[in-house]
Image (cartoon, rainbow, N blue to C red; front, side, top):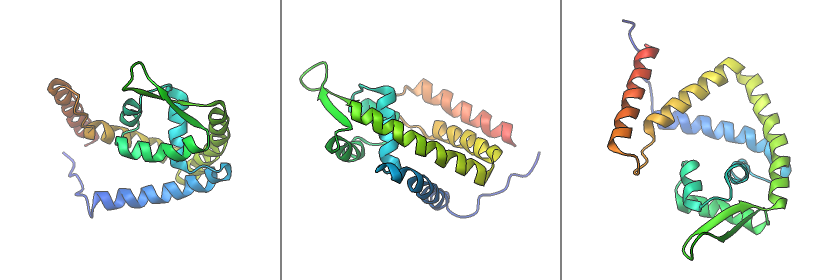
Amino acid sequence: MKNAAKPQGCTNLKLRQLTRMVTRHYDYHVSETGLKNTQYALLSHVVRLGPIRPGELAKRMHMDASTLTRNMQPLVAHGWLQIGAGSDARSRLVEATEAGRAKQTEGQRTWKAAQLALNERLGIARVAALHELLDACIECLDDDPQSSAEDNAESVDSCNRSRRSRR
């Protein structure tokens, strides 16, 4: 059996450093549309999934509801998103307006340029490997409280199998 290298340093710090660098890269490209990368991502999710309840949108984006609400405010103020009544008096639905769909299309062009530039800089094989690793980590760390104990056990088993296959 091959000896596994022990991690050096703080995983959180390393991920935050990488995230800041990647965010700056995407923001540089996407900013020409007047959007921040986070706003483009949120707008894209709503265009793809909407109309959608805010709680479901937060879950799908792996963020808490208060962060989602705060991030939606400028998009609503610009008229790119609207929040309307849901199926009952207590529920709400978020959806993109026509102006929001146009802004998302504009942002998609600059996002694609950012993605291609990152692929070129890092190498397509490294980006694909990074995506695979990130997806596996997200799956292992997903702690949706609505998941059943059986689903969580299956997820842990899957993560453990994935770790063994990489050794």
